[in-house]
Every structure is written in C-alpha cells, then in structure tokens.
Image 1: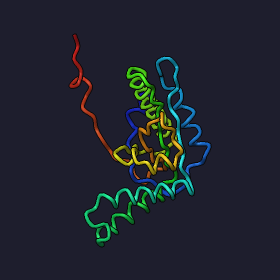
Image 2: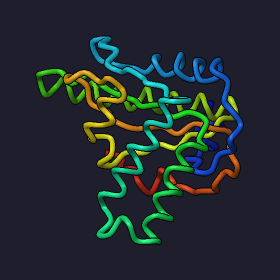
Image 3: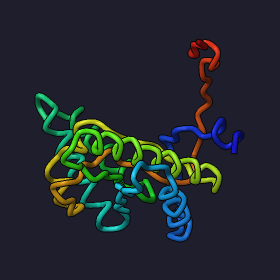
Amino acid sequence: MLDVIKARRSVPKVRADPVPREVIEQMLDVAVWAPNHRLTEPWRFYVLIGDGKRRFAEIRRRFRASTFPNPEAPEAQKALGRIYQDTMATPAIIAVTAHQAQDDETRHEDTAATFMALQNLMLAGAELGVGTYMRTGPLIDNPEVRTLLGVEDDRRILAMVYVGYPAETPQKRRTPAAEKTVWL
C-alpha cells in the first residue's frame, strides 16, 4: 500500500485502449470504503463512456469556446478540436459527486469523505495499472453537465476523473514530510 501511494501519479496522457467495466467497478468498489463520519456515504459516481462521453465532450468544447474572445478564430478552433478529441480519446470519465447536507458541519464532512473516496478510487486504479487524472474547475458547476448526469439539486459535482491506461507516467517528487510537519 505504501508503494502504491508513493507511485500513484496524475496521468493526463492515456492510451485509447478501453478500460474493462470490471476494472472500473473494482475501483468504485474500493472507493466506497472511505471513512465518513456518521456513515452518510455521501458519494455518487457517474461513469461516462460511449454516447455519454461524447455528449460531455461537446459540453466541454462549448464551455471552453465561451472563454475565447473569438471562438471562430483558427487558433481557437484548433484548441477546441483538441479538447473534444482529448475527451473522446479518454476511455472513461467518472464524475464524482457529494451530497450537500443542509448543515455546514455535515456538508463539510461529506465533502471531505467524498474526496477520500476519490483518493481510494485513484489508488485502486494505480494498483490495477490504470491511470487517473482528476479535473476540477468551473466546468463542474456548468448546468449542462448537471443535466447530462441527472445530478439532483442537493448534490455537488466535486471532480471529473479521467480514466485510462497510461501512455506515459509523469515523474514527480514531494517535499519531505519533515519539512511540512510541526511537532509539539
């Protein structure tokens, strides 16, 4: 487990080879074992493949087009085409959502628990040879994405996780824990 934690990387470049449903199901089965106060199990996962992924790619392209001063410019069109193709080339995308409780304390705890579930999902992927790349940002709050997924009003999309077999695995390092730790 310690080796998997240290070896896991965000993998932005994946091969187009499909990730079998059984592998994704294994990742999701491990995700739900995250600790969560009061056992609320606040997470819900939406797996995008096939037509669902295509519709998401179109939403992502439209969303990104809205950020360009001139979306019809050749360089903008090239970038928008790349966004669409990169999304479609990813074998699966998992939207990770958390229930949004009315009270601040439970909402905060449920959000934290869902991110722990997300970490479990990504660690399971690493153990199974599957790369993952977590994306957040303003797109996850886009109403079109919520409609595509059918996300209820009391849920928040926390991340979109791109899933595929690594084309390359980036090398990273971390600051030693001793430099980030205060002992009292």
